[in-house]
Length: 308
Length: 308
Image (cartoon, rainbow over all chains, first blue to last red; front, side, top):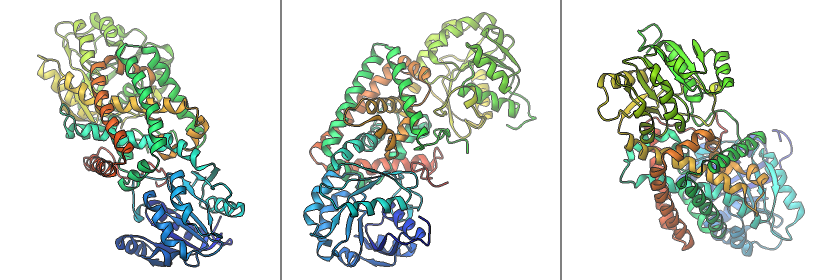
């Protein structure tokens, strides 16, 4: 979508305006995807910052006020607050409006929000699979979603026209679209995102508590691989606490698989089974190749950070 | 060191010319750090490629021939071959020469090589903590070591002048220097490099074998965190097989700590202990900050790869 085409929504409201909300607001404004942008946040500091950055047209600490007359409402807050926000905005929602979100967890968000959605309002959850390790309204940028996938998880019986409109919205934001059930989403994201974050947080924690190796040594020699984990482990603590608490079953299931495989690898090291190690390390290279081939990363030698 | 100053060595020989050897050869040539560069490799294809790239002055498949008259010999091959190479070159080493290496493991390399080093030859192992996920002579570049640490691990009783010369050499290559024992090195690198690689290889392997989630889904939605692990898990399989087999004790020790912490985290998720998760995720952010503060990474939002 380019500037000047018909907007997909008249008024859009964001509840929460961090990295993701701030990025959507920027691309919506730049490309004319909605006519008017309302922003509501819990903290006054964040709201003031969003106003300074000019991310919206109207600003309110009351989410119900922000969603009044909105054609689309997108929750961009930590998933633990989804139910409370849905309850707060419910009475103010316009008939025919679409309520959506950007949470990294979908099954639990549907369970929290669905009971509060009034008849005649469409509930179409979504999850743009994009981000950086930074957070807050300043961290957003309009091209965050470009070429990235957005997963739409319409609950059973969701209105098809409303789903199609959310698909069109996310395509206008630059995303590629996949539609799946909330439950399947939570399994896919557990392995592609939640477990990677969990083990990154974990190893950074382990490294900080060693008696044999000082924190200063860990920091100095982090270029050997550890550094890339710290980037992931710098992600927003509130958001990630909520992800683990609200996708508990899938995370524990996938973590079990990860640990089982790790023990097999430990055993191979202990008994000097070099061929087994070599085979695994060769197969993982091929998966990397596929990710580059489908355009989800480049093969620039980023790990070393020395070449431009 | 800039071009035109006195070289630190007359003739330098590289046994193996992959990412690391190829990068040293390039900076040595560019900045006149040695007068003559001899290259030896096991495979004729690699040697031919090094010749095409113009990385050296002389080329030989016989390592003994390459080291003849060399003032400095650097092994840049997988650590599993260190002992055999030391044995092969020993008779051809010049009196007063320095033998070094670039292996990611030091205790075991000292045990493999030390017995073969002739009297009157100095053995000063080193480990430049720098790299990318790519390998082979084409992957090297002269600035790989710039601002990165190089750990020098002189065995007990090593000649001080020889150690000082290796320090000067690595400083000329752009490195910052730390001197420690081989045993301490192996503990530090186990946590900052070996375990990060092991868990990256492991999660990529786990993801490839799930019944619930297809490989295509893992690849599509890798931008949620998984992608960064695949970069690390694309590192050279032979090199990493050797690292794990030859730093077995420290790796198993550190892996035990990692798994212990991971179980505590799993338990916190299971019992919904949000404060414990939040506290850990906040502390890990501070470690990230320290790594940026000491210049071992930048705070550009690389994880998202969208900003320049």
